[in-house]
Length: 187
Image (cartoon, rainbow, N blue to C red):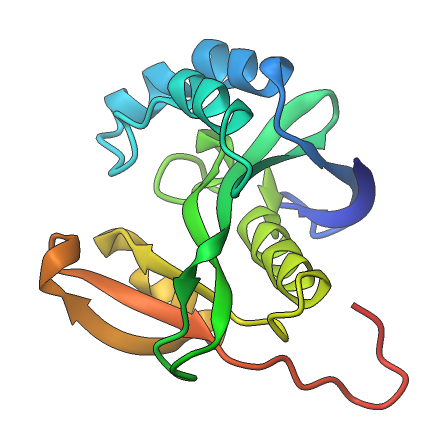
């Protein structure tokens, strides 16, 4: 899969063409070669996530899908979603797409680089999770547990804050409810 998306260049806010693609070895190689050292140097909360393992793991799991955002020949974002086993907290008895992992490149994080290289990577990945939710018949419902420093980001995305969950290391659970589109609006 390859879907054209648009990001904003951090330095001047101009639109830049990017692509949302299936997670592959090239993306994991970019993570290892370009991300890992910076994530650890700047003590980012996801510094120990193992995307090498994640890529291998999803290959054998029908309910897991991996995606990446590529721009200017580099991986700018990564996401894994679970599509069959999670239920909505807002609409009990309804399924949702669960974001199992989502990350943006260190150069796109304002706590590492100002201005960031690209803006809109995380938002593009979340938007695609909603699209997958609609495609699967889940009406746009998406859920995730946020790392502490990312809570504000998900609040800005208008996700519903369901509070902390003890069984998930007291991480805050966020959820998008049913996607309500205006007449004629495309995803």
